Image (tube, rainbow, N blue to C red):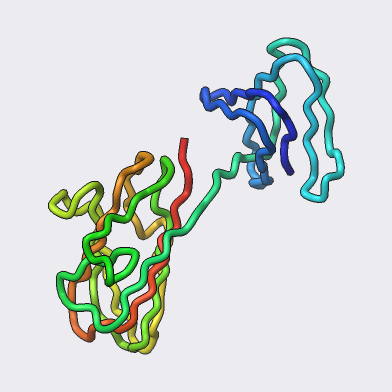
Length: 193
């Protein structure tokens, strides 16, 4: 469901949004959000556009929504490495631009990584750094794929810091056995408050 509103709204944690519709989805758990609206009408609509609930608000009225959670947008960054990846290589947008920095466009966290290549039984690590190739590694992800040629890491596998808009992420390949070939990697980032 979404809230249609063309003015500012404020959540109890102080986050403010301006213009547009914001997606709320049921969590199955009793969670309430207090929302402070200026004078006017607020409509909560189902995904198909049908009005689910209408509130007529006075100045600074609070509306409590129960069993809803705010879903922040996610986006992906695609990385390609053609050929065999060697120990110490940096994974960037493309191995044709090995010195390119992977720029994070919004305040966010890295929540998932998927990867695929043409070899099976690959063994490697990916070391992740924030804002520089000589900075401290914030995560080392181990891949021991067995008979698979692809895999993923989910949010619980990744100890991601919060990236600010314009920060960079540097990913280095560490060989641990059979090398990958023609590596495609997708980084999933999710906006945070």
